[in-house]
Length: 109
Image (cartoon, rainbow, N blue to C red):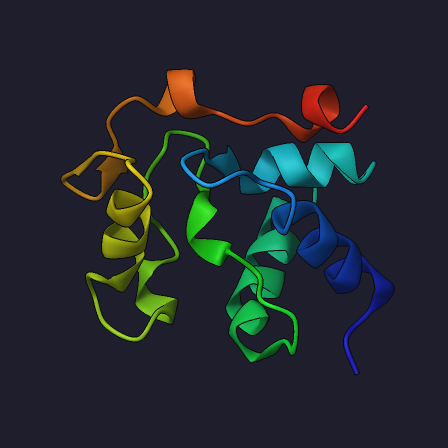
């Protein structure tokens, strides 16, 4: 059974619109646990096993890097999912990260 923290992370991630991205740290800050970016990453690793879909591909590191790509079905799956939503990726990094950044502190208040 996952912790309430993980379920809270999944709920935030489910609200990220297609074509937008956020960071592990932004989710952690929104949940009031600013130092728990790594735990948000662990939650993303488990997100693939949830009954209700969690668009984990929309969560990247603070620089837009696809650090979670190893947890998808293939090395290019995360990039392909983002590109299917119109997000350009080059060298495993979201190219327009600042413009596409979705901040839950702003968007969910």
